[in-house]
Length: 162
Image (cartoon, rainbow, N blue to C red; front, side, top):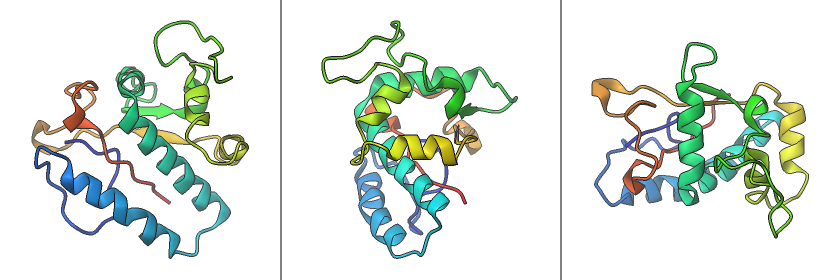
């Protein structure tokens, strides 16, 4: 099981094959985060993290897209700079407007996961260096190279760093 960053839970995480611990960690994280007194910037990171986690969970195409972009190693690490890829199509097809008004770009997909319409715009303007990091974990337990985006047991946990 992979992780983009550390979980918000202090409990150790192990892949038990049915993602029960993942579900438990994701249910606990919002309560822990909401109890913190966060700056506006940190709150935007949390908002993005929540939306991104849900999008990753629901979209194998997004997982494949993030893997492909991470493998490019634009900075010699498995980072994906959001603002560099936000207009790229997630599905591999040219960007087109969908029936619901969204575009099949990363930005268009992510818009669907925010409750308030302007939140993603705020995130992009306030966090121009927003980066998704795909780690290489010890003992080759997870990496961008070994990640199978179509395997439901390999849906990464999303964390936010300050």
